[in-house]
Every structure is written in C-alpha cells, then in structure tokens.
Image (tube, rainbow, N blue to C red; front, side):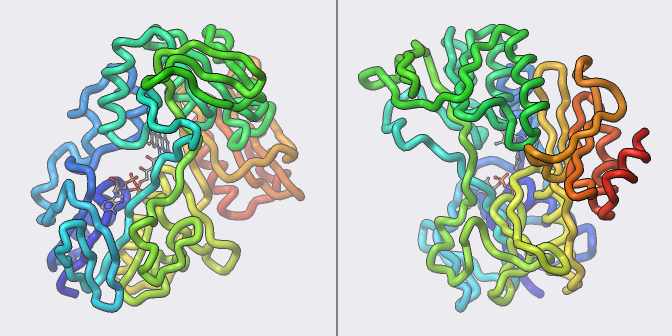
Length: 395
Ligand SMILES: Cc1cc2nc3c(=O)[nH]c(=O)nc-3n(C[C@H](O)[C@H](O)[C@H](O)COP(=O)(O)OP(=O)(O)OC[C@H]3O[C@@H](n4cnc5c(N)ncnc54)[C@H](O)[C@@H]3O)c2cc1C
C-alpha cells in the first residue's frame, strides 16, 4: 500500500498514524485536519485550560513532536467530499488527495440550541479555538450560565466556579450526569455542586435568551429569568459526517463499520467519535464519544489497515470526568433501574466503587475517587461476569 490518508488530525487519527509507523508501515502518510494546529488533547479544555492552570504547550498530544512520524500534515484544510469510486479525498480548495486506504476520524460537532440564533456571548466548547475565546471572555465576566449538566456542562460549571465566577447550571433532567450515573449517583453530584454554592436549576429547560445583540439573560421554561454575562451550551454532540453525505457510506448516527473499523466501501475505514462500530460476534453497532475509545479504535484500525486482520475489537464503554476534587470514572452502561452495590468506600464520603447489575449480569461500574478499582471491574464486564461474582470479587 503506497499511501494512507487520515482525515481528522486529532486523537484517534494521531494514534492510528503512530501505530502505522511503529508497526512498520514505510509508505506515504497524509493527515488532513481542518484545525490549524497539531493534534492536542481535548479533555483539559474544560478542566485545567479553562481554569487557567495550563497553557497550550501542556495539551499537545505528542510532547516529543511529530517529525519522526514522517507525515505530510495538511492542517487548516477541510475535507469537503469523499470520492470513494475515484479513491480520493476532495479538499475545500478542490484539490484531490488520492489514497490506497483512508481513515475517517473527523470526530464530533457540538450541538447548539436552535434558539441561540446569532446572539454573541453564547458559546460551545469542542475545539481549542472555542476554549481560547471562552477563556478570554470568562476573564471579563462575573455571572455565567451553563446549559446542560452532562460531562462537558458539569466540568465547565465546576471550572468556572473555581475561577471565582457566579455559576448557574440549568438541566431539564432531575440530576447532573443522570444518563451516565443514574439518579442516586447523579444526586451525589448535585449535592457537591450545591455545597460549592453553584445555583442548580434542575428539571427545567431553557425557553429563550434576552439581549439585543449580545446575550444578557436566559429565560427558563418555568418563567424565571437569569441575568448572565455569558452562556455555555453543553447539550451533546453529533458525529462530523456532513462532508460524507454523498459518499455512499451509511452515516446514520455515525459512519457504520464492522468490528474492525472497515466500512462497506473498499479501502475506507472509520474510527473514534465519528464511527459506529459493530460489536464482535453481532449485536447492534454503537458509537462512543469518549477518549479511550478513540485511542483503542485508532490503534485497532491501523493494524486492520496494515495487516488485514479480521479480529474485532470488543469495547466496554469507559469515560472519566473531573469535578472539583472528584475523579469520576464509569465503565459499561449503568441504567436507572439496575441494582446498585457499593463496594470499597461509601456514598457519604463520595469515595467508592459502585457495581451495577441487571438480570444477574454485571453491566456497569462507577467510581468516585477510586478509578484504579474500576479497571478490574471493566475487565469483569468484558468477561460477562455475573453480578454476584463481581460483588464477591469486590467484597
Ligand atoms: C472539552 C472536552 C472535554 C472532554 N473530556 C473528556 C474526558 O474527560 N474524558 C473522556 O473520556 N472524553 C472526554 N472528551 C471526549 C474526547 O475528547 C473525544 O472522545 C475525543 O477527542 C474523540 O477523538 P476523535 O479523534 O475521534 O475526534 P476529535 O478529537 O473530535 O478530532 C476530530 C478532528 O477532525 C477534524 N475534522 C472534522 N471534520 C473535518 C473535515 N471535514 N476535514 C478535516 N478535518 C475535520 C476536527 O476539527 C478535529 O480536529 C472531551 C471532549 C471535549 C470537547
């Protein structure tokens, strides 16, 4: 294979490029990325970078530089189209970049509230460029409203509070992080925010924004109005597949792939946030939006491209988040009505490992300030352990 092209020069793409080189690929590598910067790490954008504790040099994904990878970096260039029949990626300039194999790793796009309109002061947080602007505006603000209490929204709210801002966090569901953690652990997170004096508005949505050109207040569905200097919207992401609309690929909720990252088109692979991979041995294809999957899939698909191996990647979902002093980590997919068993520590101390069971299977685990103990639990989920065995193993 003479030339491999990676579209999306970020976490998953970089891990794939590194694996291709470390496993002996000596042909041409081209990386196309619309952001005008070398790959960087997104998690600190809502944490250390937003708080002002880290600068940009600390978030580079490859601290030692990228020269040894011998990649042709096409940064600040957007892929507009995939011409799968002609085996080329078409750039916004019209230039065609030919490939023998292409990896689509274009990640996600942050969702905006349609009612935001074109008012200024309403921010999203996905890219470094967003974080730079947001950090500058936070330096001049006193009151901030965060919309959405998922991973990004809660982290941004905690970071803004730690910067000394007055923070209101608005969430239509009953607790922060409730989708990922369920109601009991979601309530623990809510308590921690309240202890800090963050104004939590739960069970209520945003009805509109006020202010002539720039946002001055948020109108809630319960009729209340929150004066604010700026708004940060964290209501989830969608896969970055717009540019693939006429590619012939199935892009329903992400680029559909088999369990190795191969699509239905020859020489076309996808991985990371943008991809929806089948589970090995059947089961519905799933898209994940977390750091660890982007890394694991990037490495796996690179081997698939290079060695043609048909072995599928079995993934147990894993995500971490940092809120105040709490590192929260979750494996598997706990649901609201699962049985929960608290092992190692206690809810009162907010330091524990919780196991979640369904139909006597271990289906999830959540750790507050105990992330090391989560990894064995993640392995047990992968092995299909029974809930009783998992509880006994963590007795
Ligand atoms: C603020 C923030 C905090 C996070 N914190 C955590 C965390 O604590 N824990 C966790 O597990 N996960 C976290 N995540 C999620 C994690 O960062 C992502 O899952 C991961 O970055 C996905 O990697 P990726 O390479 O698939 O996509 P991305 O990192 O999104 O990279 C895709 C790249 O492709 C580029 N691109 C898109 N379309 C095109 C195109 N048409 N042409 C060229 N380039 C294109 C994009 O600009 C981007 O640079 C966080 C994400 C954010 C935004």
